[in-house]
Image (cartoon, rainbow, N blue to C red):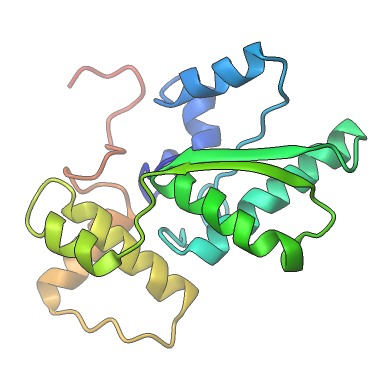
Length: 185
């Protein structure tokens, strides 16, 4: 799944449960082909801790762990696995392909389709500076600071407030708003 926010209410599992997941049509298409489909919430999203948004290694491992869990649940080890996604999902798929031989040699990853991978974070930050996607940049900074606490993230008071708002999913520019499912406000 693509980037939807950092708060637990932005987790794909939650959004599917309440009927607000915007990428559900892609999953349905795969299921109509007879494929078993598994989705990960990624590390820290819908689980304890802070979401490691934009950290490819974490996302790739989460995707491989989800595939491994699905195979175990279905009782079908060594079943061919395909991974696809766009944006954060594309990055997860790309990193899964890179990590699979060493991290999950038991997962038979046979195909990967990734799109919209945020490969150059400096370019992403420059493009979104002050725009509607600026929350994505703050989310990535929070994700990297979570995954790598040794990285410096010097923030002034305003930066700390914006970071707190984005981490809580409350910042108005962030895709997962505070509105309740079905709200029109």
